[in-house]
Length: 201
Image (tube, rainbow, N blue to C red):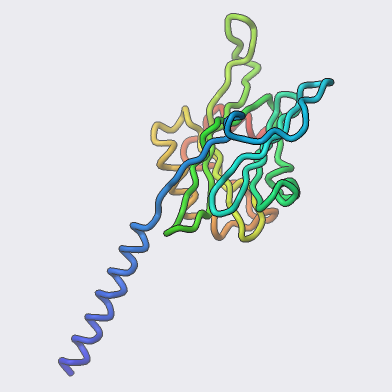
């Protein structure tokens, strides 16, 4: 009986230890989507200056960034064609916007499952001294393959002092089980002006 109890305790401790190691294996790496680090596709449009570029990512993935009419889309795929067909490539924020050049890749062990990127959303109700709209910052959590690529969560970077931590937790908690086209994008933390602007339809 004592031997059985010892074996059960050993199994329990082993499982707890494995769970602890798995939890510790979560981490982040980074890549750049700055134009100098990417390959531009074609020439900027003479009509509106729109551009498309492909940037190296992680785990054999590329980051596709297309800008049109001062609005961007960011998508992920094994190649440009695959990235352009993902749900993320069809998500446009209504106000003028842009994404920052640093991509955070959230991983479990060596496998990336989500990306986090800071966006700036133009607020036409808050002009600067030159009359141009000031921007409001927001973090976007996007799920990665296998399965569709789409936005999972938005975190207002101004309304939430710990926005980066909230975005990482949202990625860890929701990205892998998120169903694109069925689940609604989650607003994590305090809902601020950037999130309001991003969810205008």
